[in-house]
Length: 531
Image 1 (cartoon, rainbow, N blue to C red):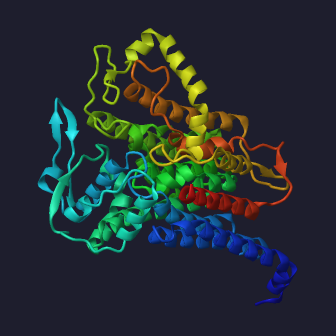
Image 2 (cartoon, one colour):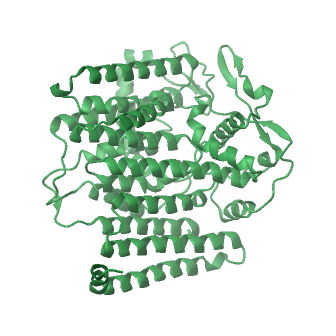
Image 3 (cartoon, helix red, strand yellow):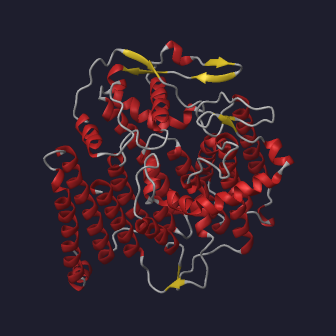
């Protein structure tokens, strides 16, 4: 150990000792609070102890890093993102997130394709009046019998955790089960690959689900790490979004939201890098093209405008070169073809049952309400209806949309977190946009801010329009089914436009900032298990 390092340790000895004591207190307090479930739920109690120790270790590592400066902010994210991401595989267990049963079936179908184990009925589609009405999935009998509850209750946590150690049975017997998503199955290639690997090693259903989620966690952490690495500024802001409970819930599930959020972060980071640093290496362009491919396929192309962000954000006369024009033309054609294919194949926004009946006015039939929605023609002929619905939605749902974009409600909109936690995470996001007083990092000009907000608002409008047309009955005055998590893919871009030269911080607070986010995760974990 060199003299400089020893000098730093000696100088900050009190901070290191205090931080160690604080970390031990945090870990022990969490374990003590969980003591009341020790006898009834032993597996859950063991997990809570492990979770408290991991979170305390993360916090102490941050304190050590504030003294010794071993890791920059993106490497610290790599550590915190992997550890907390893996914890969320159990904090929000399978089947608890919205529509996850159909996403699990879809990922399982992709694993069947990888293992060449598709049933004959699984290879075809059942149609009625040119609409897809059924897309079955063939599963092992030992997997079908382990459907878990949609509620995050202690007994369900215990069942899932204890099942991880069971041996599979009747693994050779196959049963055809419920439908899967009618959209492109390639969106599940990451989680499906993890599930296929688990099945290849004859793991049980709990481990199959765990491996699918684990692969999603790894993809997300790698994408955020890469995005933070190339971002010219706003790394803390992206760190905060990646640590939102809602973000972690969706990216640790088997939903293709993981793919949407991960790819949108990558495309946004590349766009900002290209606009402000004039850098677009060949490897970066390949990554951008792959990310764009998945982004356009997802959610019926609701976020397709993000794909054009590098070109419109980085547009200037000096870049009007032949190779740039050709690249932009190829990407545009590529997006048009993908979206046209999606419309032709009927791969709509909701990704579920695409057999949509419509009224004479063109409104879709809403099965859950047993009535029709307004059609586009009706909105055109009577725009006051549309204005009224938009006004009522903003007035009545704004608070819900903000909270459900950050932290609450989790699960199937039934796991509530305190408002204090929600707005603490939101405050950390806003704090992450603040500039250092001595920073020489570039920023956005007015034109670039306008461009970003046009893209952001287009994505929000597309999500809202889909829920309005296909999920909102005529008898409702507000858009139904709209959730804040739909805005996560464009949130970093929107937040970074708030950075300015008027509100500044005089001191680098990276480690304090990271510590605060991990501590908020500790509070979230304690609340979820002990509420």
